[in-house]
Amino acid sequence: MRIILIPFLLLPLMAHATVLSPSAAISAIGGQRMLTQRIVKAYCQQGRGIQSDAAKLQISSSITQFSAQLSNLLESATAPESIETVKKQETQWQNMRTLALTPPKPETAKQLDDIAEVMQYDAGELAKRLEASFGKPQGKLIRIAGRQRMLSQRLAKTACLQTWGKQNPALKQQQAQAQKEFSAGLLTLRASPQNTPSIIKQLDLAQMQWVFLENALSGLDSDADKNIASTSERLLEVMDKIAGQYEKMGN
Image (cartoon, rainbow, N blue to C red):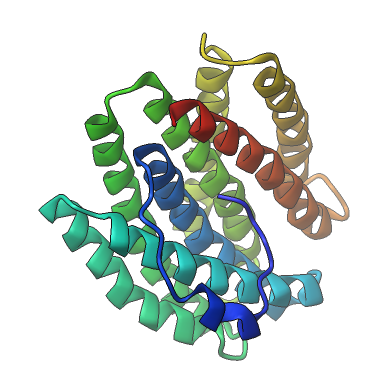
């Protein structure tokens, strides 16, 4: 899944859905996980005035991307359990999209995050089922790379929400868990014998950006909010390229 900004005026031209290959479906549902976290993160950043213009654009492009990917997944799902999950996502998406377009408020961010948490969990479970039915080693790599994309945005989201509105101790725990999961995921990907020289190069870049993001998340950075926002975006870009390369290997 490539992260692109698609003007809303072009949506009618994209109305037709695409039947995804098994590897593309795993990547797409991983992308949906990421977008749930990205939307909440951008909503919070907009509300707190952290690169607010960029955050507003991220919400717009993420809504467009999620809607297009959802259409593709609805077209591609064949197993009853997969169809049920994607249709549930479709229903939840209506509420999430509506809230994401409202003026940013801490209480709305909480509602938005509650929906996003359910959606990202269900998407993660579907990714595991799609990986199992795919039956190739690339499936796991695509799924983990997709989760890394999600975690890059989850970390920026939790950091932003912790200092907006009422304090929620669960967010700090969520951030610590996401950091552990990202580090473990990176190690798993780096250890894969499937890696090409190009993928290894991208993983090296991801490792470097991960060091920068961890430093910004430590709270010792005087410009932490801005650095978390920018570094998480660069990390997402790299992980998106890695996920795309694994997807091609699986085709």
